[in-house]
Amino acid sequence: MVKHIILWQLKDELSSEEKAEVSARIKEGLEGLVGKVPGLVSVHVQTQHLDSSNADLMLDTTLESVEALKGYAVHPEHLKVANGVVRPNTKQRVCIDYEI
Image 1 (spheres, rainbow, N blue to C red):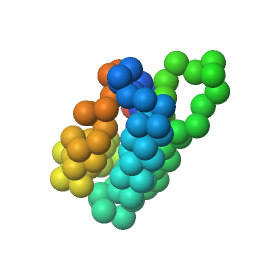
Image 2 (image 1 turned 90 degrees about the vertical axis):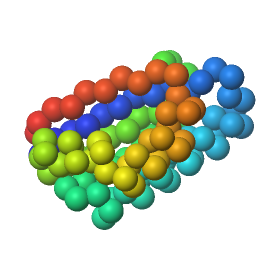
Image 3 (image 1 turned 90 degrees about the horizontal axis):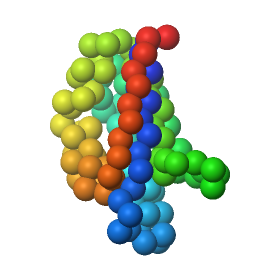
Image 4 (image 1 turned 120 degrees about the vertical axis):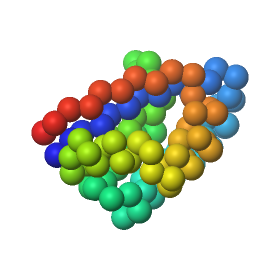
C-alpha cells in the first residue's frame, strides 16, 4: 500500500468565499475518484483547519501500490480535477509519498 499526501495553499487573490467554493469543488472532485481510478483505495480531502495552519487543504490518499500511484497521476479522471480546479487555484503544493 502507498500513501500519497499533498498540502496546498490556495492563491492569495481568492476571496474567503471563493476559497470555500474552490475547496468544496476540490474535495468533491478528488473524493469522487474512488471507484473510477484503478488501485485507488481511499481519498480524504481536509478543508477545515486551525488558524495555526499554513496550508489550506490536505489530500490523504491510499493506493494499492507504487504502480497504482503512477497510474493515478495520469488517469484522465484525475487530470480533469487536477487541471480543471486544483492547479488553477493553488499557489503552493507539497507532496510526500510513502509505502505502508
